[in-house]
Image (cartoon, rainbow, N blue to C red):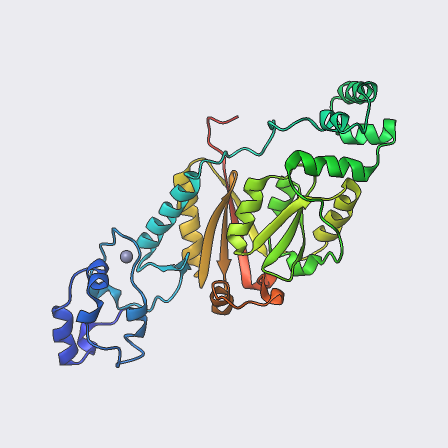
Length: 334
Ligand SMILES: [Zn+2]
């Protein structure tokens, strides 16, 4: 779609020769260029300023029809410049200080000790539950043993979990799998033991965790969706039920890749962006997963940043988006 200079009137040719050399120069002096009256040819041209700070593309190469792809609200004049934008985003995500690994050993008070301190169980009951757990290789959680041996209720165990993780016990009224299946890709739900429950009246969605409320994970969902996430726990049996229902729902198209270096993350993502040519794309890291979401429709890309959005359109519909998940597994890690 490259336009030849000869196709333009002589007057325009002269104007082109007077132009500055790079996008960066144009961006610095937008008023120096003639008005946008000659639409639509020049239209794209004025809306789009390459956001790659090191863009070396000369002015003449920009006569291309390249509205999309867009990445995090930014336009890039070429695949090379898009890759530079994505590399910067990958660095940003890696630099946030959170570990690639999920929570394993936390510094929270153990659940059994917490219940002991609440006076819900005796020292003897705790000892018996710990013995049983050890004898079976830790297969069932301590809460499950206490329920079985000491008649502790499931609600008590869940309340203790919510205290342990400092999060609410969520209510299960109106679980709507189809309306929330575009919130988080299925593989991330499985990996981090969570299920989205519903959207709220404000710009809010409820996310239930099985037993470890990972606030880093919840924050990543919040950043990607642009809505507030209320994360909490539900009882084990409720979790099983909503999880099963959720797995019956249809999710947006997703693909999963595994790479060994962060440079590969950026390379793969930039390639997908050039192939899919989304109207909007966004990158968020959730522990070892780099989650790239691509919006196919400009409508939602606009409403996602608009101030007035009703709760029915809080989340995109499943066909409007697709996800790419790149798992970073450095070679030296076990
Ligand atoms: Zn550029």
